[in-house]
Length: 114
Length: 146
Image 1 (spheres, each protein chain N blue to C red):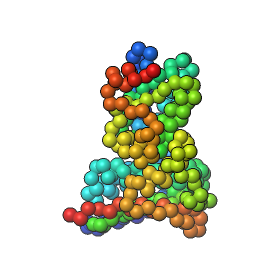
Image 2: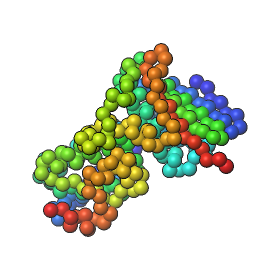
Image 3: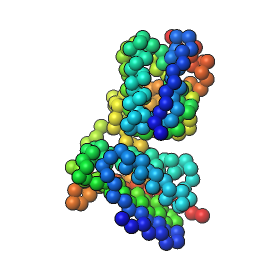
Image 4: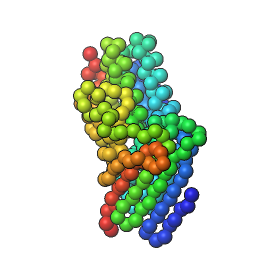
């Protein structure tokens, strides 16, 4: 199973609910295309909800990083919401926990965008 | 390739195609052996990830999806250890020549974290030259004494 992505607009923040696996192949390219599409439409505040993501591999991590730099380079912000323990572990091992802004409450996360 | 299962010891070998389907097949095979060996769920997941990363490397970077080349997977378990080897028929590489993915200047690189994750998720890890050609990765999980 690859990742399924649903976009919700909460104020001026695009909340991207991801379900499934972000791994090499279909899962990671679907994610990349969705983020680029949001940016091209001028949505520069993106909150990626990973609550229902069961698996991310190094390729998926690469896609998160790529999305982060794409959004940042366009003057936007990409933040993460609801990491499960396994994803949190991955971000700690790769030292990316210090790069991404991570939230556990959607309301607070949405309000944190400037 | 043979499967051996005698009492507590298990040994499985597979020749896999150089395709991404092989990654799922290999990961599934190893996690199945790990389940039978009594490895608990989180550690099975970690081992599965390490195996996945090594299979991806073998297919993508080693064999470069070349249909003429195979990926060699072996998994064996006894009471103390679960041992996995993943081999390819590529040109080989020097792990020490790769950029450090934890260096500040490399944190935002899109790739290069596979070896780091393999190392983090198993108890013993080694990259060695495979004869006559290619690379072999050794992954070992120590099993809790019961």
